[in-house]
Image 1 (cartoon, one colour):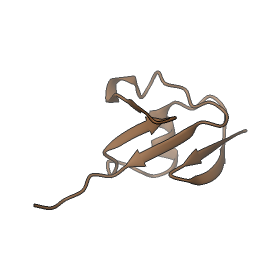
Image 2 (tube, one colour; image 1 turned 60 degrees about the vertical axis):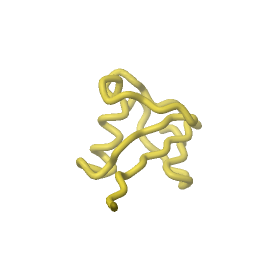
Image 3 (cartoon, one colour; image 1 turned 180 degrees about the vertical axis):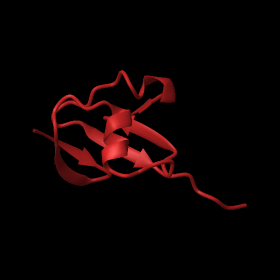
Length: 67
């Protein structure tokens, strides 16, 4: 297990997850808009190759609707 921060909340997750797997385990489905790890945005095409590491700070941003 590793410990990470997701949107300011500390969580223990299994080691070796990529971003896509993490989003799935957290039941985000398609409700997220962008993901940043340690304040660096990760492109959608890198979600399957970017492995979450111990003590990473992850921000999952949802799209904002409005006009």
